[in-house]
Image 1 (cartoon, one colour):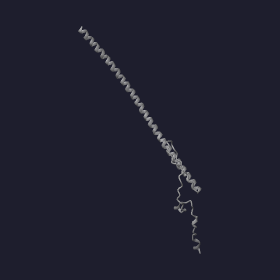
Image 2: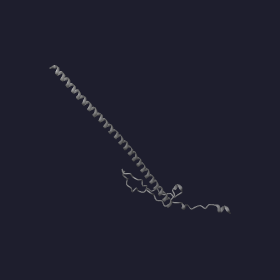
Image 3: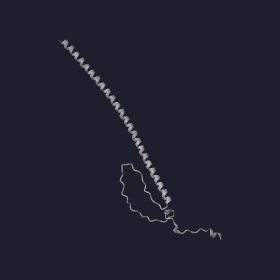
Image 4: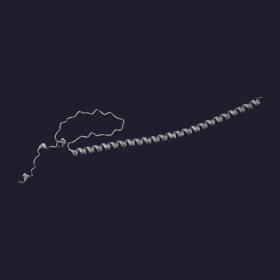
Amino acid sequence: KKSASIEKKPEPPEKKDDDLPEWLGGAKKPAEKPPDPKPPQQLSKEPSTYQPELKSFSNPDISQLTEVQLEQQASLLTLQQQQHELRTATVLSQQTEQLQSIIDRQKHQLSEQERIFHELVRKQVSRQSALDMEIKLQQAKIDHYIQ
């Protein structure tokens, strides 16, 4: 009787894998929440690096793969943060150069305006002294005619 040899043998229910989640057929685990031993972290102004908390699994292959993936994610986040900091530093450097260029132009314009102002003051003083001399000469002529 071949039909009897083809029949599947049912697996005993106690062979469920405890490492699998319940939705994949693993055993149901009690939902216990361990107390949080970590105090809240304070914000720091120094650049920080992301250091993920690694969870341990009983299956060494999954655990090692997960650990590698978490390390890669942490490295990627660190590199992205460094890239952002470098971009920010580059932008700040460019803005500093532009600001210095503006300051240099303004200093040059100010010195040019001061030079022009001093030249105008010198010309005005010269005209004023020439006018004073002309007035004195006219006054002397008038005084001469009166006498």
